[in-house]
Each structure stands twice: as C-alpha cells, then as structure tokens.
Length: 113
Image (cartoon, rainbow, N blue to C red):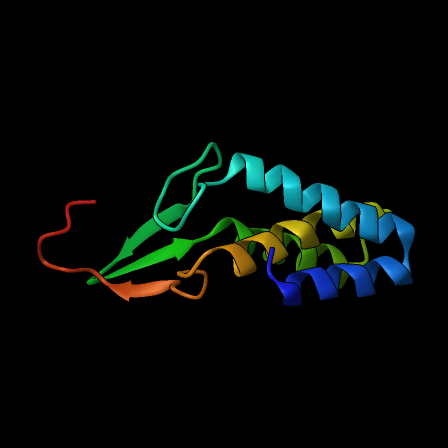
C-alpha cells in the first residue's frame, strides 16, 4: 500500500474503529485472494465481457464499489465493518494495480478471449 492508501486508511480508522478494522481486513483479504501483480489472475476472477469490438473488464474493486453503492443507496443497514471491508477491496484494487482504471478497451484483432 502506498502513502496515499495508508493515509486514507488511518483517516477512516479515526472516524470509526469498526470501519478501520474492516478496511484493513478487507484490504489484506483481497490482497491474498487477488492477482499478485497487474495482469496476473488470482483466486478471485475479474469478469470480462466482449461488447462488439470492445472488452469490458470488471475488476474486483469495481464490483465491490458497485455492491457498496447499492447497499448504501437502498438503505440496507450493515455494520461499519462491512462497509469498511468492501472499501478495503476498493482501496486495494485502486492502489495496487497499474491497470485499475482500464475498464473498457478496444479488443485487438489477435485477441481470442
């Protein structure tokens, strides 16, 4: 985790101990389960879909963020720990991979997936 990620985690941990513990546990859980570096497949698979000439790549951080927004938007109540745990997945995905923002890309002619 880089300095920005550590600073964010500390700031959120000061707001709530449950939230902070959730972030830390979520971060290290997904760090263990996800690919060790950009482009490597881990135990948790990223979903990819072909849409015409494009490839849509749903990273683990993105579907964690979608679940988190859904839960907050529809007023499901979960403990701060659960919000932190999902947030830890998002933080790990964004701060650990160079391709975190590569969601939609043009599929090259020689790709067969």
